[in-house]
Image 1: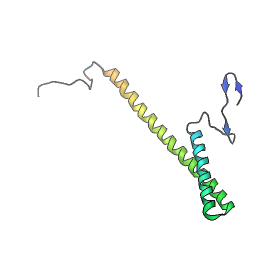
Image 2: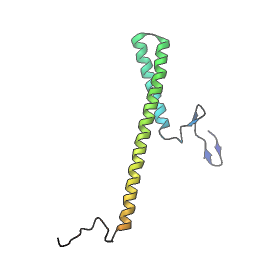
Image 3: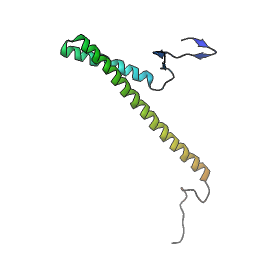
Image 4: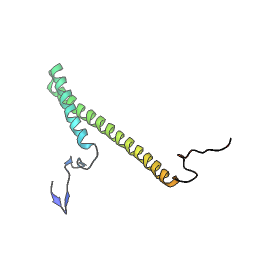
Length: 111
């Protein structure tokens, strides 16, 4: 990681994924690493087959990484959507405050 013009370059995985600037990337890779070790080790302890255990570990890495990535990205998207709705509501509250269209004012009228 070098500094150029005051910017720090992030660490890239396989030269394409900048894990410092990509949301959820670091956590997904760490979860994937733990998942691969767990899956490979459990398969090795159960079967004592080294090559197959390695393959299971790689598959465990891919599945755990992608699962963690999509779960985190889904939660981030849901949070951004909720924030957008709240911002629109606050904007409308400020816009309509004190007018006849203000939904917080109780209308008293003859029925």
